[in-house]
Length: 320
Ligand code: GDP
Ligand code: ZN
Image (cartoon, rainbow, N blue to C red):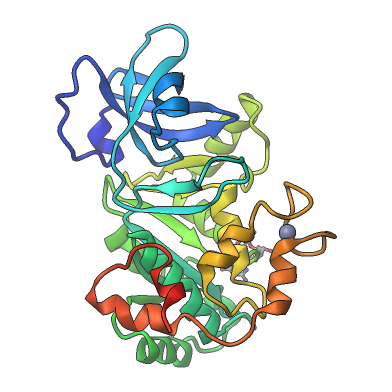
């Protein structure tokens, strides 16, 4: 195992620390990989709780005081090249990252009655702010007699964003993902519940899917592929980050009426009455309440400005 296989390109002269990548997170305990091996690590308290160090999330590169036996200590979080974050429900903390250091954001929308250019636009705006490069993925192409008109509409509206139609069920179009699946590259999928994210991940994992599920069941981190927090290594050497936080981000954009800028809406996550709120049917849901209140503006401002580069987080939402 080599850290560069996990997409690490920065210097490696952090001796005596080792650069490592966070590949999983379970209740404050991090699963990490580094040149010395794979294992678990916890945060070096002082730096994180008093020193203002950025709390790591799945995908982060960190500096590790490696321990052959027992948990290693995470000393520092290295600068991120991309990340998705939401408001942290913990008082005193500002943002909670849910995925970091990805290259590509697959913005997924399914071709069976889910297709909606305005929602695609809002999701793309969020993707552009993350620092990752968006790719539009029209999923379940097998359920659509002809995907071409949809692809044409998408390409006309977003000429600078690559767009593909794929079917995880039949494999059609999946070869088009090859440019984003080079060894060491990291992907995330952003899309509402049911667009086929799990199916895509399983298709990309191929025969490894069963093995991965088995490993997870074994260490008791839950049997369902959609709830574990993790960075998965794909057979070709690319990686995909699949965390509940990422799924919650996708969910935001499924709700009709969430047309306002996304930053304020993101902040609402964590303000719902129930901490595990899915923002679908629970009482006291701050996200749905806001959805009813907000009306009007889409994320066009963010997208039209995107050609000039990626804006700082929240800037698009404040644009007139
Ligand atoms: P997620 O919630 O985004 O992870 O979506 P899932 O991967 O769980 O898929 C939701 C549903 O769509 C499941 O019933 C899948 O079997 C189905 N599905 C996913 N991908 C495809 C596809 O390419 N073709 C068809 N026909 N069904 C699909
Ligand atoms: Zn809610």
